[in-house]
Image (cartoon, rainbow, N blue to C red; front, side, top):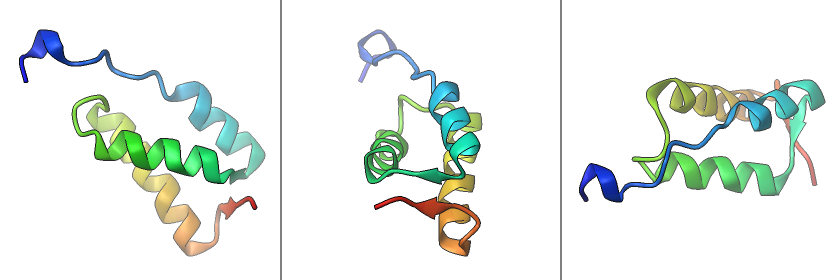
Length: 67
């Protein structure tokens, strides 16, 4: 895929801030983050690290996954 055909990088900061403030994330937010991280080209390296940290926090119980 040519660089000009790629979608613009997504601004994740508002979503990441919301998750940090709430101390939990919804299943919808979880799916949004999973989709973004799997879309390889729309997430920069710093955003990828932040998303991975959120997933790690869910696995270790530091962050709750809301029902």
